[in-house]
Image (cartoon, rainbow, N blue to C red):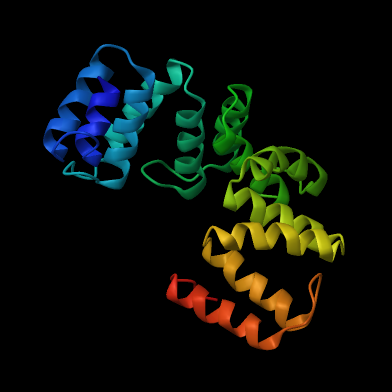
Length: 212
């Protein structure tokens, strides 16, 4: 049912019909499908595809999905606590949910927990632990993970490796990476100096919505 719902929402093989899509996803969630519960939670959190934004319903569905072992739902609950989105901001709760998420093999959980360790938010700053958590997702091609792996290497003055990871993230149009790869080009750090090309990356990042 969940897959049928997404087919309708995205117009895959059927005429696009978001209302019909939501109906099928809701049916799947009512039948105990954890992925559908997670999807409904995200839709309510964003106020997307015809559903009104409702953070209480979002959290309710995400917690139901978490109870079914959905690691990505646990990660999303962690983000809500990290940002104070629909719940009081609580970094310790965020860490707890991210750790649960990692234990349930969620790449999103690894990324979010890795960022917490890199920034020292809710935990003692630990770039080594951050790298351990972020590297697997970076290798799988996740642009945010690639961006932070680049930064950790940059901090360690491994500029060549930093530039490689930053380029990979920038190729996926992750706006901060596009900007920062431009800066590496302008400064000739880890890559041959190329001011003109670097400025092009800076302009592109602005077009993608990046603000310094």
